[in-house]
Length: 158
Image (cartoon, rainbow, N blue to C red; front, side, top):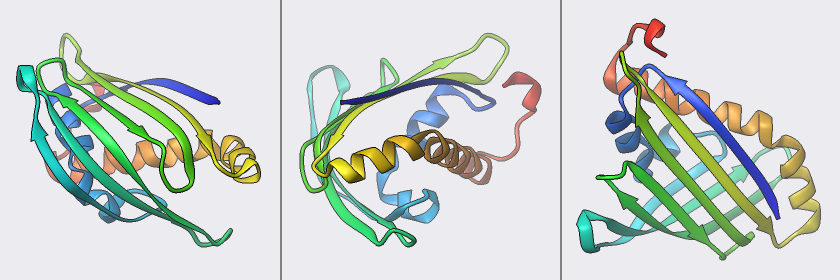
């Protein structure tokens, strides 16, 4: 199982970043490697939480890797957290979590963790070696999307 964790400070509020990450259907508009995404179902859970079943299509032109996987996503607006579980398609097991926390003086902190195992050992090895760079590209994509949606924010608060 490969584990990756990171913490990022951003100039946007926790609520703004939560909404951006939960907008799964827009991922193909801005996220690297995402060739399509959609939510197939939603249901309300106790405490204001929501469960979504989401499908993400990925494609990497240079390697020819293409695939889709379905995730069960649990969103908790009160706690400002999003968790996803999957064991379909290319993925043998995946668990990831997003936590968003406002910072005094503005901006927020994003805590992100992911544990995954792919069905292909070769693909697992390739992705593990590329994950730092891939996550940087994903982080930049989310921040650029935030800038487009919410506007430019004083970076001193990040």
